[in-house]
Amino acid sequence: MRIVAVTACPTGIAHTYMAADVLNKEASRMNIHIKVETQGAMGIENQLHATDITQADVVLIASDIEIEHRARFTGSKIHCVTIEEVLTNVNAVLQRCQSLAG
Image (cartoon, rainbow, N blue to C red):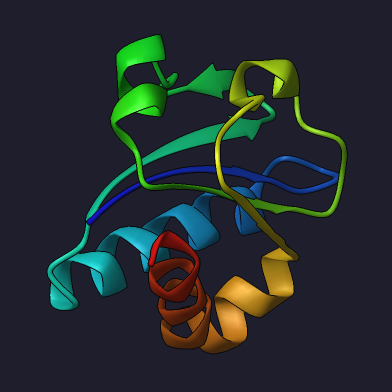
């Protein structure tokens, strides 16, 4: 299974990067391939490419704000959650992504 994710929070400092970190760690534990783009105070980092998006089974948007360049995910299966959901129960978030992927 392949997931691409975007994390973003209102201040773009701690929670954006904490969410990316827990997603990477839990996805690895669950044998899920994930690439996480962060949209934080430093701008967009680890930017997703068109091939990343087309090869993904699910796009996970973990954000409390509107993300930049959302239109690039048109036509993809998208699962939107809050940053808090990722930080408090990342396993459940990734399980829902697996269910969405079928």
